[in-house]
Length: 370
Image 1 (cartoon, one colour):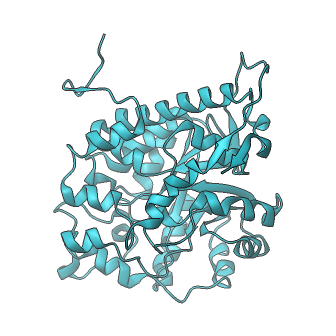
Image 2 (cartoon, rainbow, N blue to C red):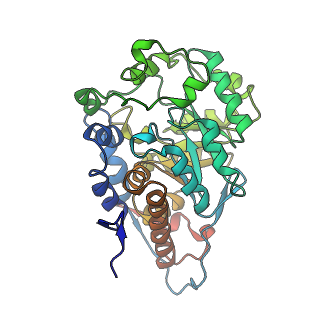
Image 3 (cartoon, rainbow, N blue to C red):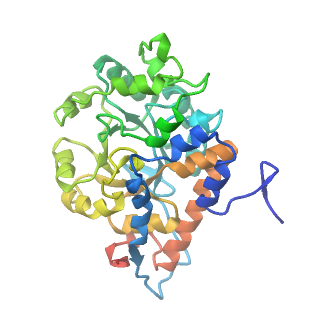
């Protein structure tokens, strides 16, 4: 029997098919905003291509009749080594936006990182977690020139029950994204930066809608350094997770500054074009931190086997970005849930066929680089 989605489309069977269907639900401007990268988009493409450079050396005659995909990140349990990456403006994809994404993540037992630039508020998204036990939600933070605004957002995230601050460190300014410039990207009427508005950012009238992203970019503090992490840590008891680390020496500095986790990431190829692919940077960083903090990977995940490769190279878990938006655009909460389910099923098959019954069985001996 053929299963239909929204009564008129065959249910996608992988994440690439979700992307194809999403083009039929999104405006060209919205699709380009979500899918584009910086410059020539070389890093955007390389994030996925990097996974093809690593091959798997499977073990044979291993009992994999019972498999366990569960893990934990910073002490919180996950049904799958997966978190949803912070992504802006999710109401461009669906009217329920980040709330729908959070519901699907919580129901699946995976984590979610809420963007500073979310179109649903810190509190609205946090309320979803009250329906589930041990829900892992982090708040992604940009440090603004207005330190009072930054403080308010941290205090709101802590009060709402978020488990960590995920500080984006690779965006002192925004990268040059040519598709957005060509489209003259602007938010449509009715979609706002919920967190910034509720935190007291005084947005001039001329920026209320079409100029919001430009105005936000002007508020980023490009002077921040490692010293500012001490100030940030003083604002709440929440552990700091640094997102955007690509070098071993920076990873060592993160340890010294008290970070509890880092996300190896190049911002989905949206900041510095020609930056190293996240997966290619992973091994150096894992070696540099030497188990002193948890290492996660963001960028290029499209198949369950990709999660296995990242785990084998030392990642505690991975973050998934754009495919979540494709699921959200196609069918809201149900679409996000199905994207997670597809990836989970693929990962389950990948570990079984690699000769692993538990995540701790996944190690670097499984991996061969071309």
